[in-house]
Image (cartoon, rainbow, N blue to C red; front, side, top):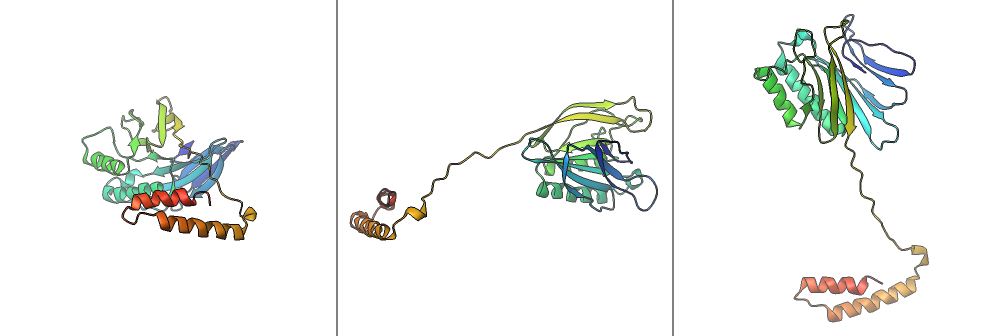
Length: 238
């Protein structure tokens, strides 16, 4: 559960939050099941939005999942250039430090208004980092799409997105979705090496001396490829 305007805590869940120190209300929080082991937690300071980051180790999964929650107050709506610069910094930070991450929260940008200059500039920032936002429905009672799920589709797939507009406790709607991570595992490699404890130095020196003489006598100084093949054939069993 990601909250951009407060949250709660129940048995079996952990809560990480970044409160607003200047006044009551606001702040951002991440509420997670106890089975999700927190591996990293950080609050970044920006002037145009609030932000909290938390990485989780998921059971039986080789990599972590990082959740970044932001809240951009409506009072900062006129200062779009500062937000775009700072969000660029956040996206760059996420790409440098994490592979599987989501950026969620109330952006207070009307992304449903595709011709709006603010929306266009915001989409340009997303394209710079190959990021995608996955909500195509109104998330606010006035009919605008203000709350976003931002991710890299090459690393994380978002599916079954559902905006619950029946919530009457807030002017923003609840958003439900599933996450499918694309995890690439490195191919196993077989490495062979000699047991140096079994090497007899006198025999090794004798073999190297004899093979070196054979190589010098038979190498073609006019053909590098031929000499390289001869070198490999001569010394591979030494």
